[in-house]
Image 1 (cartoon, rainbow, N blue to C red):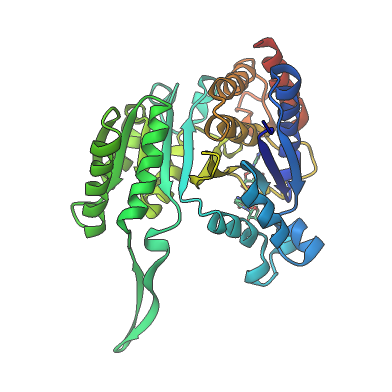
Image 2 (cartoon, rainbow, N blue to C red):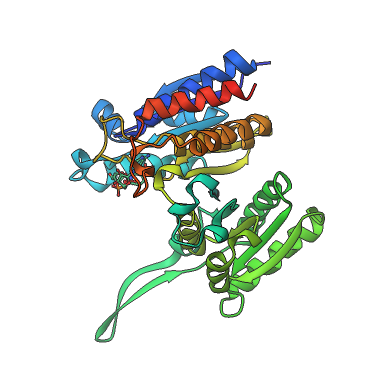
Length: 368
Ligand code: NAD
């Protein structure tokens, strides 16, 4: 059987620096675990614009459609700020998400014990936290028509439309239930069914998908405003949260920040299953290209490494290896290894990007 395939799009700024550490782990998987990937690399973002005048070429788009998983670093930087909107680096990423139809965005909020002091919440509220927010990514109020700013009499009116079809809700609900089955088997669906018809439909459809296809998963419903309160009060009550595009945008940023630094946050965007049963998938750290620290060996590679761990779990069914990578990260943090963004007020000497990657590799070796 052919090896599973990965397309690496390291992008701009610190993207290639953090991706270099993921490549070390991919090689480690081959050498030490006998798991080999067919890896190809290409350009996205500003570097693609420099090469072909476009932030994503049609050839790269076709490659992304053909592989089992895309790993992306980051795009953008001040050099490209004045470009026309149509060729800005971010358009490359948006094209990938749109043409791969990546409707399910997974944003984990996981708090490593060693970093619990970084949270703005009390240590006991966040220590050991491990939840995932599933945000619907391709529909809802960010896309619904009509939209625009119109003249009505003597004043302007701004309009956006929240619109969800039943099939859009069904597919993201399935994604959340499938995920829950690989975790602690609990889904909480969040909407505003008390004041929005689209929320009433959302609640009904999620319940129907549950009753018909996933009765073994524990399902609860919550109004999204209460959900925001509960995330601050006691986030450990949740396992998987599924919600729409707008609420998911806000709730996932909030949940992520419960856990500390931007340099720690991975994400996955999943689409429909391909012929081989694997979902279309793109994995990327939540952070951007960090031009302020690029080229200085200061970037924290953990968000990118944890994104690769998500790929192992969700694209390649290698949950055991995903956990091994996550535990290796946990171990180095517990040992006090820190990149500059993770230094507390007590100070100390930070390690470089590649030293952090090497420490994680050493912890992986020790796990065998
Ligand atoms: P950013 O995430 O790049 O940086 C915000 C701050 O966090 C900076 O101080 C940076 O040094 C720090 N930081 C980010 N990642 C880090 C890491 N791994 N290790 C240590 N510190 C880290 O956001 P920004 O400064 O608003 O944007 C910079 C560029 O990135 C812009 O061009 C923006 O459009 C782009 N961007 C891209 C993405 C993406 O590729 N998905 C996301 C956000 C921003």
